[in-house]
Length: 103
Image 1 (cartoon, rainbow, N blue to C red):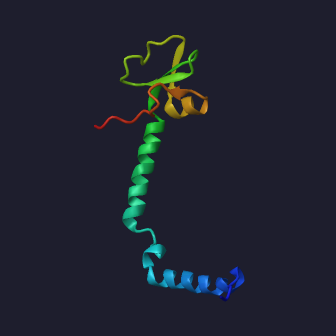
Image 2 (image 1 turned 90 degrees about the horizontal axis):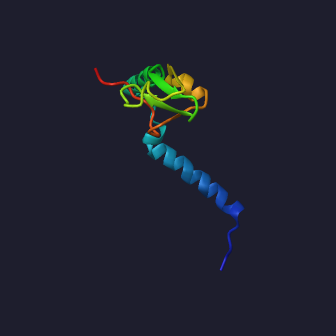
């Protein structure tokens, strides 16, 4: 039985890879206008969520979203924006980031 080394199989692998690229145009799909628009919508939502007010309990290291029963009640605490709280090392109490309420 004849043994083929890895070096001998390399050209066959390259040919196979090129054939897959040519025959599978979905691999080469460019971003469409709709993809870019949906990405900008997601980015705007994240930017808006970063500016939401939160109440930070400076002793525990947690923050509470507006609308929570603990918002503004936990002492010692202070009010700041969600992105500032995250950058300062505080964590969300519910383990989920605050989201903007639908209008």
